[in-house]
Amino acid sequence: MSEEERPSSDEGSTTDPDVEGADSGTEPSSEADTGPGQPTAAERRGFLRRHLVLVSLAALLIVLAGTAGSFLWWLNHQIGEIPRAEMGVIEDPKKNHNEGGRPLNILLLGADNGEGGKGPSVAEDLADGEWTPFAHRSDTIMIAHIPADRKSVQLVSIPRDTWLPIDGYPSDSERAKINAAFAYGGPSLSLTTVEQLTGIAIDHVAIIDWVGFKDLTTALGGVRVYIPETFYDTSQKITWEKGWNEYEGQEALAYVRTRYGLENGDFDRIKRQQNFMRATMGKLLSGSTTRNPFKLTKVVGVVTKYLTVDKTWDTDEIRSLALDMRDIKTNDVDFVTAPFGRYDTSADGQSIVRLAPKQSKDLWAAIEDDDIESYLKEYPEEKLADKTSVD
Picture 1 (cartoon, rainbow, N blue to C red):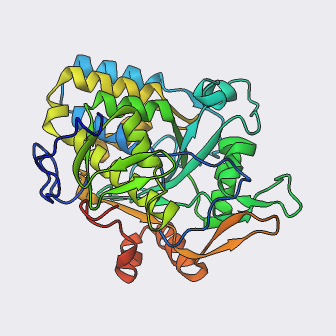
Picture 2 (cartoon, helix red, strand yellow):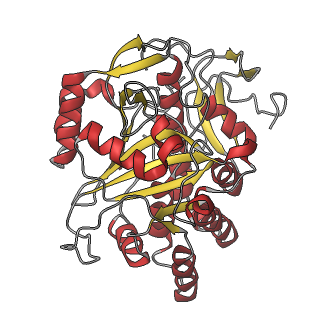
């Protein structure tokens, strides 16, 4: 909706007017901007970006678990229609298509299509087994950690400007920003790069594109977020008004893309996108969605239409995971960003991010040990702030 159309009665209020079925503490993001290899303006601390990917899909499956068998049959068919592609995942033969009782780490990537969004999708590009270098990009890089007990989820964002080695990257040092891995070598190279950075074994990869994000917010009838202070985005030429605002479609994209006008640039954008993911999850789990078959059908159709997963992830595993997570609420989801060390400039003049070495090591170890709670107890400030405090 336009600036003039936004309701002003609750502007400045910190009481969330969306109460039906929503959790009181929390609610789920996305983006793309500068291409790989292009410098970004130096900012201070804080970064994420788009997309609900697995979390949204799982939430939908969870709330549908008790509905009529015919609808579940249709849902199962929809999951089966999700495109699968080779993404470099090496399947563990010991699990034998049974992932229950073990922690999972899923690499979530938000992708855009080339040619201004009108090019082939990631699934179409991968259909012949070959990746077209620099035809796509992904500025959203997240690890979704799902503990063995399936009682919580941790979503860890990795800043797109993180500087690190990338196998075979065509530069003198074979180093680049982490988002260059996807652009150059696709999801397989992204997976390898993330595993080398973190030491974490990735079990699955899921990708959703910008169009899917836009359509999902529309299918939900908009998502409400709170803006603490009015500010102007000089890049998108938008004034973001203080108070509760509801966004969908192009406005939702603009919200999660914003970094100009935010004090900490890309790091604040990550927080914005995580905040939007939280709000989206709240809307997905609300009665206004779960008790509306027409809306549910639209939402499921959008998520499955624009999702691509690795070929080792079969329908039974996705469905079983969703059912195992049926008691998850938004308060059970922690949003974290890989710890910032400092801004720097590469030898070729790019503005880059260097992660904090020791704290990053602590985070990766906590995920690998399935004990991220210990990390969050030591670094409580790393959790996303409450929903009325995110710029």
